[in-house]
Image 1 (cartoon, rainbow, N blue to C red):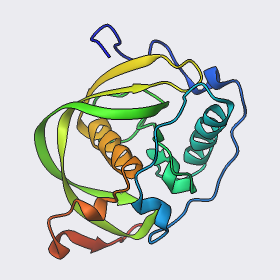
Image 2: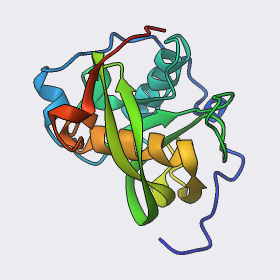
Image 3: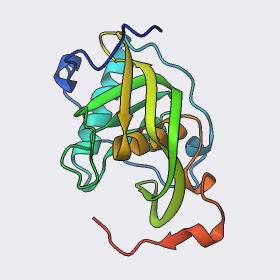
Image 4: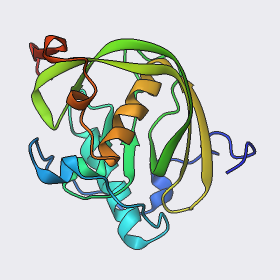
Length: 186
């Protein structure tokens, strides 16, 4: 991919043109969460349906700012993100889904607290890049994109990319001292 692929180009979940269905979220230690998912064909009917389902499931889940295919039991390189309205949001690209995403630049590393719908009882301190460049492909259109983001959206993207690689935030904490019982359930 090259630099001319910048931003989402006006893509919204409505571009999928199919209604999403809410799926059950799997919890650790479900094996799908610890296996890297294969790349997907972003223009296939199956991928478009999965993308719509990820958005639908994310939207009905209180406090959810991202959801990856493995979290709904599907081993695949696809995730949805939407940090709109989050108090920690700086840069916000709205609701979007990326397929086969990869980090191409990462800098300004900072520790921050993370939680996960697939690990509902724990949170942890994870060091992540607070400035990020990600390349991926949009479902439905198959358009290549390059997102430049920072802050909380950068953290959310890294968290979801990790899910697609078979990693949980617990795999990124510095040790047991950086894991906590969740105190607030949304």
